[in-house]
Length: 300
Image (cartoon, rainbow, N blue to C red):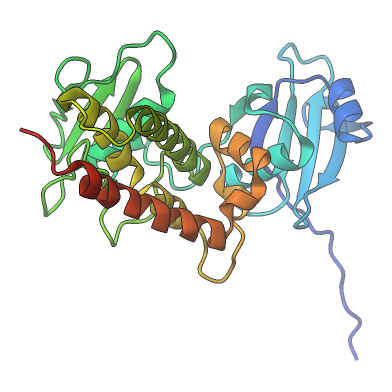
């Protein structure tokens, strides 16, 4: 029998991100051990780590490089966003400690794409800061059509620009509480934690007002103050459920790629299992009809 010939396996590391931390701090906080090794561009500090699913990561810093930080590479072919999300979750690091990240495999030329008007509006609400104007449809939102592609239009609020593609049916309107069509994929701009963060805000707002109203006739302004939070709340849990793979009951960590989403996951990890999200879906979808039953149809 001819003897087996063994060859050195060369695995090219795939870049994931750059941490805005020095090797000594990474070593202390992550429990890694850096070793000085020769590299293609000179000597570098190198350490290896492994995620819970087995993905091997390399942490490197070129000695003498003027740019601060530690580069993170994966020795696998996975979506960089997924690997980075799992790294942050398992180490306790935050998005603020990441100075660069590789683009997502599904990114479309770096632009943010919404499935509907309502989803773009929800994104603006999610990123609105205290003191910012409200993203009102007529006053503070700018809608522009793409000169090169008439099937694409952009909606801008402050520094945020969301793009929408033309669809064979009318786009879901802002304020309808419907953020996608049945055959749409999960959102590419709001993760499950983002949807449930919005849900908690709208739920708290509506409940606070309803408790203050009590069993009495309410004014037109009071009616609309509850109507819109309940309407926008209606399908938020369903949007979060879109991310849950059909064969699992717990939302994978890789689905929480935004700072607010990861914060929500860390804050209450059990809120994102199938049973809880399904219960919330039922609760939210019944809250709006119940409000209409008690307080009547929308006033003119």
